[in-house]
Image (cartoon, rainbow over all chains, first blue to last red; front, side, top):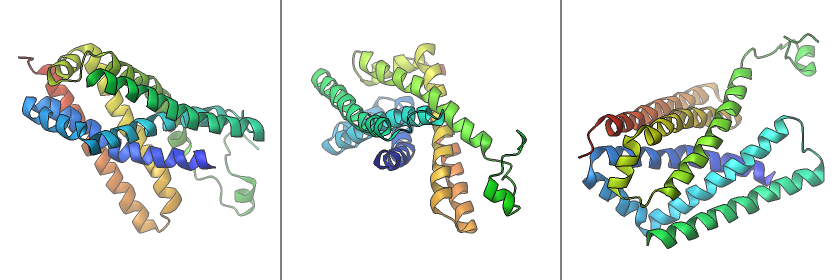
Length: 110
Length: 131
């Protein structure tokens, strides 16, 4: 239930905010060093980093709950215990993956 | 029940029949999700493996086929999957036909426009010179 609605919320967030950031990043790269510097400054600001961490978490959560939905599409994993464990696993997994990625990123870049 | 009849028992009783569409949308959403699973892992891995995320590094990465081709696929399939997914959300929560049509049309225009913009930027990077 929670994971199902999270799938929709993270999907909508990735569709609207995530793709906008991706398009901006590509356009900034195509437009030259000055445009890229503006993007990098905004992305590297505290608010920018919070948004990017949020997008990373949304990406991993949507990816993992998406795999869960694909498994359930085959008719598997509907037993109460299995279903609940799988749902919990997507939430624990997305937080661990987001944490690991950002510990690495912030450690390497700065 | 024949294989070609996808109407539900309740729909049959009410004489509604099947909607005759939607199956392809459902399947496309799944197929694009598997593609994005692979491309998403590629994108994260690429960003982690690049020496840094400076203008120069990103430009050279997307200038080559190894960066430009998967990124073009990620953009096309990503916008398609986003549009398909948002349509499900809109159809579930916006029932008034006029509003539903308006919102779905807006999303279509946003996805087509955003996707075209991103692809144009990518083409400029891939086919432009890296000075």
